[in-house]
Length: 525
Image (tube, rainbow, N blue to C red; front, side):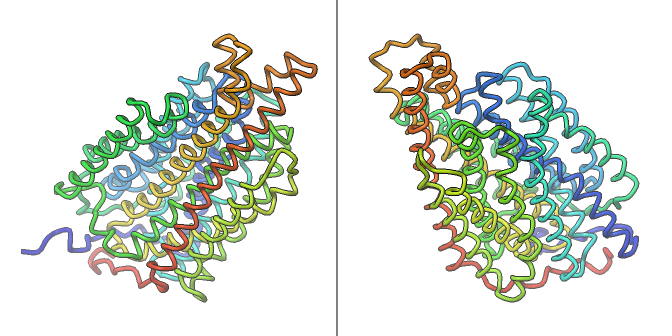
C-alpha cells in the first residue's frame, strides 16, 4: 500500500489573473512583509532607549528580542500547514490583524514584562504572515525562472525593511516616545489587510494534513527552555542547577518533538524532507548566517550608541549601508546561482559573514565607526548572498502542495538562528562584562539595586557614572565601556566560528545545482 506521505499532494492553483495580476499581488505581499522585517531593525535601534526608559538589563533586552523570535519559530510550521489547509490568504490576513493589534499593545507597555508578552503576541501574527507570503508567491509563480525572480524581490523586500528600520526608528525616537517604533506597524497592517483582500488570490492544498498543535507545543517548550538556560546563565551561573536543568530539559523536550513528529499521522514538519541535502543543508546555512547577523546587530546597536556616543538616528544612518548592501545583493543572488551554483554562492556568503564577525570582534575602546564599517558591510554582503540562494534550493525540493510548510521551515531557520545568535552572543557578552566589572566594584559596597543596574547593562553603568561625575565617574564609564567591548569581542568571535563552520558545511555537503521543483498533479492546475 502506498504511503500517503510519499505522494505529492494536489495543490489548488490560485486564480489566474495574468502576469500583471501576479506582480501586483507580489507587491501587496511584499509591502505587508515590510512590517515584519522593519520591526526587527527598528527594535534594535531602540534597545538602548529601553535601557534608559524601562531600566531594562541586557538579559531583559535579550528576552524582548527573543520572545518574538521564539513564538514566531514555534508557531510558523503550524501556521504554514494551516495556510495550506484553510487558505493561504485567509491565514495571511488574520496574521496581519493579530500583528497590528499586538503592536499597539507593545507600544503602550508600561514594563519590560508587559513588553516581552506583547512581543510574543507579535510573534503569533508574524508566524501566520511569513509562510503564507512565500507559499502564495510559490503558487503564483510556477515557472522556475519567474519564481526565482519573485523570490529575489521577496528577499530584497526583507532587506529593504532592514534598511528602512534603523533610520525610521531613529527618526521616531528623535521626535516621539519609544512606543512609536511599534505604533508605526499599524498603518501598514491596515493597508495590507485592505489590499490583500482585494488583490491577492487565495490558494490551498485540498488534501493537506491536519495542523499539529502537539508538535508546536513541544517545539516552543523545548526551544523556550533552551533559550532560557542560555540567556539566564550569566545571571544565575553557567553551572547552576536550574540553568543546567532547564537546558537539559529543553534538549529532552526537543528530542521528544522529533519522536512525536516521526510517529504523528499528520506532523507539522515532515522529517523526510531533511533526507534531501538540498533541503537540510540549505536550511542549516540560513540558520547559521542569521545566528551571526542577528547576534551582531544586537550588540552593535548598543555599541554604536553607548560606546561611540551616537544618537538613535545617527546609529540608524550608520547601519543603513549594511542593510542597503543586503537589499542590493539579494536580488542578484539567484543570478549568481545560475552562473556559479548554489554551493559556491551559499558557501561564499557564509565566509563573508564569518569575515565580518571576525573583523568586528577586533574592535576596542579606541575604535571608530570607520574601523567597524568593513565588518558590517561583510555581514550585509554575506546575508544577501546566503538567504535567497538557500531559499531557492529549499523550495525547489518541494511539491506544490507542501509550499506552506516548506516556506515555514525556512522562516523557522531564520528566527531560530537569530534567536540563538542573540541568546549566545548576548550571554557571552554579559558574562565577560560582569566578570570584568564585578571585582573592581566589589570593595565599594554598592547598594543591591545600584549594583544590579551597573552589572546588568552598559547603559546602567553609564547612567551611574554621569550621576557620580568627576574622576570617579569617568573611571567607571571607561571601565564599563572596556568591559562591554571585551564581551562583544568574545561573543562575536564565537559567532565567527559558527559562521565558518556553516561555510565548511555548505562547501562540503550542499549540492551545487538545484533540481526542478517536483511537479504538481495536473488535475490541480
